[in-house]
Length: 96
Picture 1 (cartoon, rainbow, N blue to C red):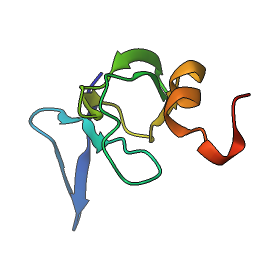
Picture 2 (cartoon, rainbow, N blue to C red):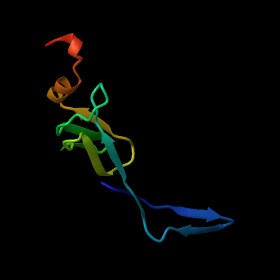
Picture 3 (cartoon, helix red, strand yellow):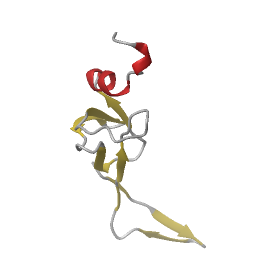
């Protein structure tokens, strides 16, 4: 959710409060690629974690994740275990 800030400026004995709260929200726009650097080529399920909670999402077939309206404080993308295993397993490791 967008976060709103209010502030008051003070200088030379005068103060002035902001006329309206200042809204802040951020976005995350990334493209997931595999080890050779190719787009993953399928929609990937993920969990987006922020200081305000988590939400689940699915990237596009080209591996694009586009999240809007994020609060300040950073975000972490966690891929589902099955998704990670299918896309990023090193072929030289063989089947697990």
